[in-house]
Length: 199
Image 1: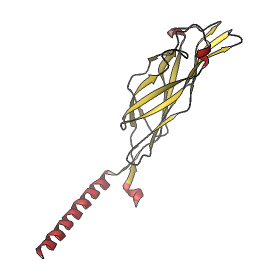
Image 2 (image 1 turned 60 degrees about the vertical axis):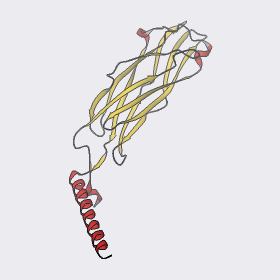
Image 3 (image 1 turned 180 degrees about the vertical axis):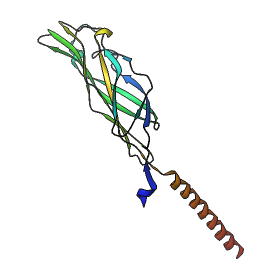
Image 4 (image 1 turned 120 degrees about the horizontal axis):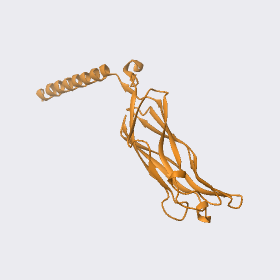
């Protein structure tokens, strides 16, 4: 019976809209990170369940010229996603940035590694699922130092996937439920009135 009362919201493509904010290490100690939005902020895509889209989200770079000792300590980075559609809510992808120096400093680079994808659940039953994953990148690679600056940075790609659309009550079911509530209220009122008249 319940299967007849519930329908998937995915009869048409689901519009996904979200803004984003990159939070990275901006001062010493640690590798000092700069970033710039590439994608529209907020971005909007229409997806069917099982579909995904990959797009450049932001650019990352450092203006430092050398990987020093403190730059080799991992520092946190996060991208906060603020969903507007299909429902208001938030989700965060977190990771680390670090300076890497090998072969006695002959080769140096910045490295960005994410801890994993983030999920955003939505809908009246919490069964709608959007997943966001971000690409690991190396940036400002150079010989005998870092090739600093935005030009030598890297583009971080985002993959947005609609894992499952939310299940919602069918419109006819909602109307029947509302009528049933009105009917129950009417019956309760009549009983109360009948009870009061006998006192």
